[in-house]
Each structure stands twice: as C-alpha cells, then as structure tokens.
Length: 136
Ligand SMILES: Nc1nc2c([nH]c(=O)n2[C@H]2C[C@H](O)[C@@H](COP(=O)(O)OP(=O)(O)OP(=O)(O)O)O2)c(=O)[nH]1
Ligand SMILES: [Mg+2]
Image (cartoon, rainbow, N blue to C red; front, side, top):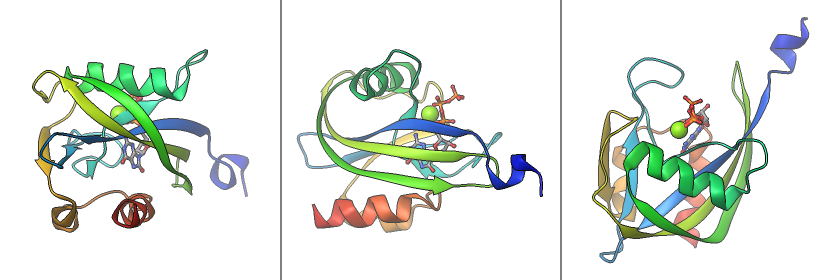
C-alpha cells in the first residue's frame, strides 16, 4: 500500500474545555464544508511552529470565537488516526475570562452542561475525551 494511506500526516492539536462561571462548557459546530464538517467539537486547532500548546489554545480561541481564556490543567492527550490525518489532541481545561463567544470560524457555538454532551455528534476521537471529562 502507499505510504499516504498507511501513514497520513500527523498534527498536534490544542483543544480547550472552556468553563464558565455556571459550570458549563463551550462547544462549537464545524463548518459544513471540509473534514468532519457539521460535527460538534471542543474549540481548538493546529499548533504552529514555535508555539506552546497554551499559546496555540489562546490564539485559536481568539481567532475562532473572539474570546479570552486562561489555559489550565492538562486533561488528556488522545492519539487518533483518521483516513487523511493523524492527530494528537492535547486537551486542557480552560476558564472563560472575557468576551461573548461568536461563531467566527465555525457554524455555531453553545454553552452546555456536561450531561448534555451526549446530545451532540462529535468526531470519533472525542469519545475518550468526553469519558475523561466525566471522570474528572
Ligand atoms: N478543535 C478540535 N479538533 C478536533 C476535535 N476532535 C477531533 O477529532 N479534532 C480534529 C479535527 C481536525 O482534523 C483537527 C483540528 O484541526 P482544525 O481543522 O480545527 O485545525 P485549525 O483550527 O487549525 O484549522 P485550519 O486553520 O487548519 O482550517 O482535529 C475537537 O474536539 N476539537
Ligand atoms: Mg479548529
């Protein structure tokens, strides 16, 4: 088999579990076009060169949602292989500091309670993140 199929490119992704003062978590819906279009996710994106995970998360959250967060404790890192991409989802708890979340680079944003997460469809790799979150 070709290498492209057996060994797709690998990206490190900073992922944020953003908590508000009501104990809710922010989720966003990916744009309909593109990979995993229309699925819900925890906000985040690819780490750029020279950037720490904390810097990546703060930048992605500002770019995608227009809000400020503080990046806290590491929750879990999930390594997952999709057809076209291998991802290392590096997940941190974060706290909402300022700004009203806006759907700048996503289709929709919502604050939800932990027990509401099961009502939304997430990418395959998120099953383990959500399980870790419920245990934490
Ligand atoms: N942000 C985020 N990405 C996730 C989650 N679960 C999951 O499998 N992913 C995957 C989807 C994508 O392949 C990858 C994140 O990359 P992305 O497309 O959001 O990257 P980005 O924000 O830097 O966007 P772009 O500039 O490349 O368009 O990780 C999740 O909960 N949050
Ligand atoms: Mg993203």
